[in-house]
Image 1 (tube, rainbow, N blue to C red):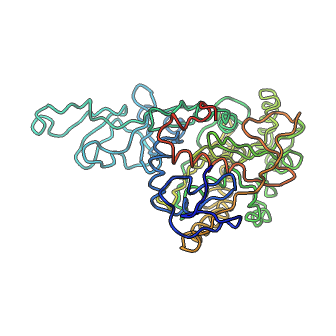
Image 2 (cartoon, rainbow, N blue to C red):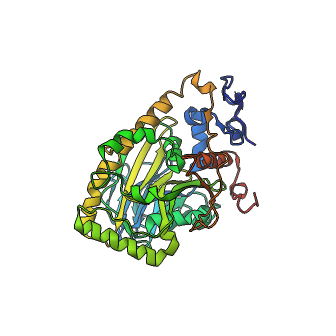
Image 3 (tube, rainbow, N blue to C red):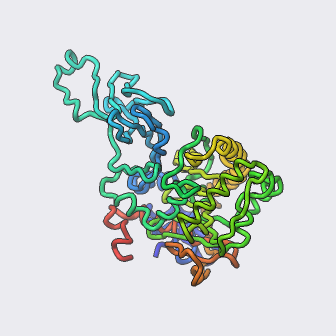
Length: 470
């Protein structure tokens, strides 16, 4: 089992280390899931960060956008995969692609706009041009300088190894040996369905609403990823938001009544690194919402009824925040959002947030939700501001020579019971009942055990642990 050992090594239950830098970069020196201790080095060390780019981000399936952002041929959206800039676009034949946003001649970005429509991508440095299917179609002085002997077919844009459109969400990986997307997420598929299906149960019935919010946070990317994967413990941080009444009706949050009569469940998929916070309602009672806005209230009442018909007992799941390993977090309820925590150095994260609404929702509902999303999430949202304060100061307070001698504690909730018998629906993964204990850290432990596997494993042959019988 991995240990936080002295050369980052935990000495006893205090988590104190001797202050020396970890001996090499093996995760066995950094992560001790058995004792619940994790070295601060994995958040602040530059060498570890650089290794992550190769071991984690170059091999994982990463969220890059939504099909509604590239609806027509020629549409493009410039996204990111780890530190790499990528172009998500739809070619003339209607196929969706993702390319490295870098000219094959001298590396200049061939697309410098966030989104738009174009027949070709032309490098502004030396003028090489690429079609929307990635092929090199234009080379200045092709006859005189290259004697027409440059093989254009070998110099197209670098395309991702695999791409998957799942219910409108677009994921990609640079690793051709990685398992398929559905194999990568496994039974976590339930939570992707809750996120991407329409609120009325329509399969893939969502679309991206408005633009993408982007901002920079002075912290390591793992802070927000682990926060969304399972931190029920930090509610003290949002006390002011609760007092203000950030809910869409100017009162409490929209699902307060549903949560009050529900069983709190944390779900971890340690063999894949994913996790989610959830509640399971014990009855099918419809709870009214947004009563101050008749059009909105009627729409969501209709949606609740449709969900019960189409989803049965699954409609009882009040899904909360979750993280798909490594850096895609989401909220499948209102506000329905996707956040990607792009690494920008050991001490900086570029946060991107997408907002989803039902395609079929009336315009009054979309406008209502737009206003709610603005005041709830993102850099101007009251809830997000609370979280960023925590991550910013936690990171800066962990960089010092003395601070790095002490491991973080992830010991909470190690003996919580599994999902109670007879409680429906039965959730996948390692589901534990946190109702009495209020909060646990099994999801974070699962996340970091998977991180350690990625950091050590030489290939996907070792990483596909669910196939190896581990």
